[in-house]
Image 1 (cartoon, rainbow, N blue to C red):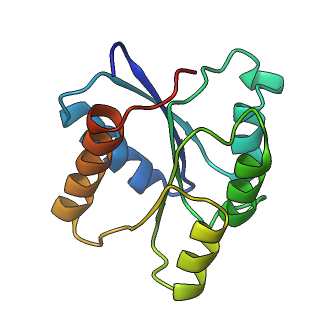
Image 2 (cartoon, rainbow, N blue to C red; image 1 turned 90 degrees about the vertical axis):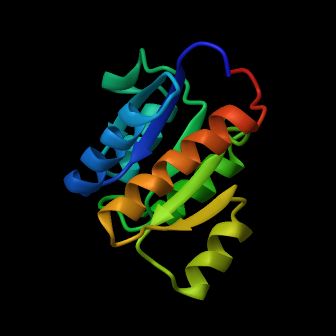
Length: 143
């Protein structure tokens, strides 16, 4: 991908958001990470509403499932049923390893499902692998 890749992280855990930012800084790619803390903010960001009226369209969304205000499962369904948003790849990155959540995510057209590693080194490696795969190997539609 040429230029700077816009990523949207939907994550209510400050520690995980900070680690994600650090992993992306360590990567070889030019990325700009935008972080929202709940599902309602995520949809406002994606629809460019209110304080997000000038928000950049993300090339990739990293979505936690367990979010306040609007659950990540609902956010995923809304994104994938919206004509303007459904082509943005959504990577579910969550602590849940429940088969029900995995089936629900893929049924709602998540592009992939990644359980969050508990180990710091593994967490950083997973974020770097997501970045490399989605922003170096995969050809994404232009925004």
